[in-house]
Amino acid sequence: MASLFQIEEYIYYWITSFNKYKIHSPFVYKLVTEVFEKELHYKDFERIEQLRDELRRNDTIIEVVDLGAGSKSFRKTKKVYQRKISKIARKSVKKEKYGHLLYMLVRYFKANSILELGTSLGITTAYLGSAHPNTRVITIEGSESIAKIAQDNFDKLNLKNIQLVVGNFDDKLQQICDERKQFDLVFIDGNHRELPTIDYFKTVVPYCHNDTVLLFDDIHWSEEMQEAWEYVKNHERVTLTIDIFEMGIVFLRTEFRQKQHMQITY
Ligand SMILES: C[S@@+](CC[C@H](N)C(=O)[O-])C[C@H]1O[C@@H](n2cnc3c(N)ncnc32)[C@H](O)[C@@H]1O
Image (cartoon, rainbow, N blue to C red):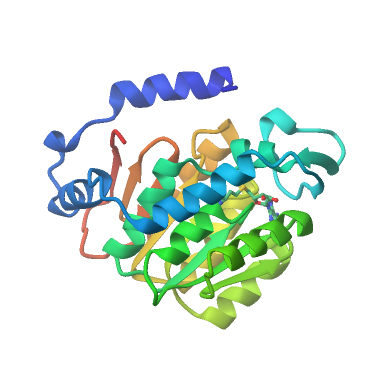
């Protein structure tokens, strides 16, 4: 259930966000009309959503290690707890609409080298990996039991372009950045706390080029996440941000001379 903080934030977003008719930037207008508003249907969507349905019906209990801020509805004092796969599929995985958005963004920006922090059951990773045969996705998950299910899902979908790294972001991220050298798209969706989120951003940003797109999940999930989002917005390399409430989209393009922050209805 949404917290009072989230409800207030949503109301504010709803009042202050605007639709494409108020957008002056040709880059953003094109993005909205060609990505946000496009309701294309791909066979990949069906295969992935079928798998999501199976996971939502799977009541097997697994032991989960929580390395992040955890789900608010499941937060426990202890770091290892039992969870049904069905509940993880319902609570922790991004909804279909956002899977479609990520898929479309990968295609639109022709992103080849993709990094995801927070694999969970691999549903969103599957969208990232299916969008284009040339994409190479590297995704990090800290909980071994969850990662095992994600790997099974990639195998079921025959996605061979996804490399799953099991471990804490804190231990794995720098090494992955050094190995991959450059990312075209980065999706940060794990450990929803202020300082770790800022640290992950600071670690990956030197490996981002002019056209890299960064996405931050749950930017209005808590005050901490909102603070992290403010930090990102104010960073010297950030030239444009788009807040669609569930996610924040970040661009570093130097051709945008004036920093711009937009809240767009999605
Ligand atoms: C919100 S879920 C990711 C959802 C996924 N991106 C999707 O939409 O399908 C966040 C995941 O990040 C993992 N996680 C959180 N903190 C972590 C950390 N510090 N290191 C590694 N994994 C972490 C959790 O175990 C959890 O599975």
